[in-house]
Amino acid sequence: MQHPSFSTHRHRWKILAAGVAANAAFSVAFSGIPMTAVVMRAGYQLDNATLGLMLGLIGLGIAVSELPWGLLTDRWGDRPVLLTGLGSTALALIAMALLAAPRPGHVPGTGWLGTGLLLVGLLGGSVNGASGRAVMGWFAEGERGLAMSIRQTAVPLGGGIGALLLPAIALHAGFAALYAFLAGLCLLSGWLTWRWVHEPPIAQQAAPTVAAAPDRGPLRDARVWRIVVGIGILCAPQFAVLSFGTVFLHDFGHVGFAAITATMVGVQIGAMAMRVWSGRWTDRRRNRPVYLRACSTLSAGLFVALGLVALSAEGAAAASLASRALLVLLVLVCGVCVSAWHGVGYTELATFSGPARAGTALGMANTSVFVACFITPWSIPHLLAWQDWPMVWFAGAACALVALPLLASPARTQAKLSKTALSRST
Image (cartoon, rainbow, N blue to C red; front, side):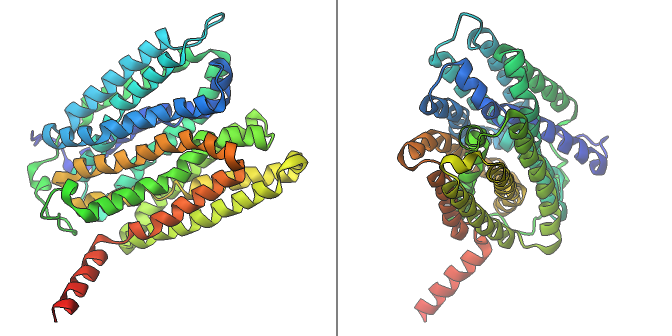
């Protein structure tokens, strides 16, 4: 649908703002609810294994629904998918406030909690690919890294809001108020989508991109899958910090609630700043694959350092002020570093796939990401039972190293394959 009265140059910033609002509203839920892990464990009377499963169910719902939502976005467009997803997510959260919140004298079963969190993930998964496709359609190649990185700041922005507000809401007002608050955010972002989000002008949709789209669809392109898998694996250490970082600092580091909240808010603020900077920096230098591999390498080193400090701090030493400060600092730096690359990674993937197929490609990436979002908190209690916290952080370092070769440039990979085939033919 064309809207000739719109000034493309001005209206694209409204599109970006609506995309940020949609992603941020949902991110407050999927990134913020894990920040209430300590309160949730007490309020719902859960052990660590059940807590990990509950925290992973939103990610499982998103992982299952992302690809179907991405396919629907390419078929229907951004606006219908965003409105449907945000509205239905708000309804699911209202149902959770009524049926799945603990009250004095009543603790709902884990079935109610798990079903609600899974449903929120299934419905809310719509916002990621749809908002990303909208941004890709309205911004030109030289601006997409910055625009997508700004859109990706919505995830740490929502996570920061969640880390700042949700534990206090859960502790003082209860989980019913928490779920109602999240529903209100989804409805507000849905209103912005209704006002601002439309399909881009056809002329802009037809504009060529620097990286040509592959001849076959993303689902059948091995190079797209390579980036998708790399993105998902590199998200595992990020989700380790976001899902169990509060539990680690509370149980192992004996850090107070105020310091834990400040640390997790700092992770999200740092991630926002780094995503914007990295998008602009890589736009100017056209070095996205190099930046992605640098983030993988640095993240691996930082998580090894966190594991070694946790190993040395086991026992009585963990209670010392110096050990607590060092643990807080490393959790902060690890969280920022392993969250800084998202906008660049998604831009590289969407640019390579082409605007017409960006919804599908981004849906594939988000499926991979939220498979990691489910598996990571589910597996952490098992790692704890096996080797305690140092093994958790060493496993995060291993994931970053595994992702490193998968995030090579598709063009470079194709050139190597072509060169190999040519040498064999001669």
